[in-house]
Amino acid sequence: MARYRLRLLLQEFDLPPGETILGRSPECHVTIDDPLVSREHAKIIVHGEEVVFRDLGSRNGSKVNGQQVHGEVTLNDGDRVRIGNQEVVFSRVVAARRPGRPTGSLRHCRKCQTPYVAEAPQCPNCGYSPGADETLSGVAPANNLDRDKWSLQLQVELLDKALSLGRVPDAERVLGRIALAVDERMTTGLPVERAQVDGAFGGAIRLASAHGEIQWVRWVLTTAQRLGHPPSRAVVEAIAALPLIVMEPATRQLGDAVAAFELKRPQLDADARAAVDVLVDVRTRLRLQSERTSPNAEGS
Image 1 (cartoon, rainbow, N blue to C red):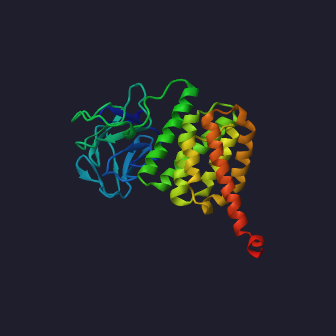
Image 2: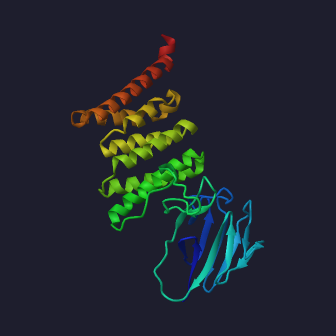
């Protein structure tokens, strides 16, 4: 049975049976970081021996072999699909070959605007080397445990990217996946790296600060309590900076977390104890706020 692939520059993507979404969103099967590519730009549908390309109403359209796509187009071996600034080659693979990556990402060079694979250390056109904030982590490790940790790190970096671009729905979806992954690791007794979870905690508080999403403050506090260690000093200071009216619905989770951390205080290092002190101060301010606004206080 034939298999199908897309080739873009130095990278190949297997096309499994069913739908493969191409677009700029990190939720797509093939993510293309190109300003001319829509969030969900197009899909390729593999149904038996037939492969169909469909534009999803993208802003800048798509072309197959130079012809604008209207509706659906059947793809044949060697067809060239133009999406945004790049051209993707469709191929039919009959002989058994080493499988390509099922998903992947592209980077758009900030200097010359040439698209190229995210794994390349520099732009093949102009030689520009992106900074650390423009790329995700490198090649996935083979070990299953390390692969899970690598996947979590990728999710944390995607969260940071979505927040930096102001893509709140994307950030919430990614944070939801992170929360599930962290919960699964804790439930099964697998280790959770503090650096990774603190990155997720920081993103959650940024989301709460910008959009009042208090459920993520609750998640940070309850997850840190389950892990048995307070969040980093930077995260708790971000919590302390939240308005009290935002923090008020998380009063119970804050109290439970502080009580748990106080019991562990002798075993904590200096930075962790300082973080607990910040949380204690937030709890105190919430209590004072509650006393000032209670009916008994107004009648006294």
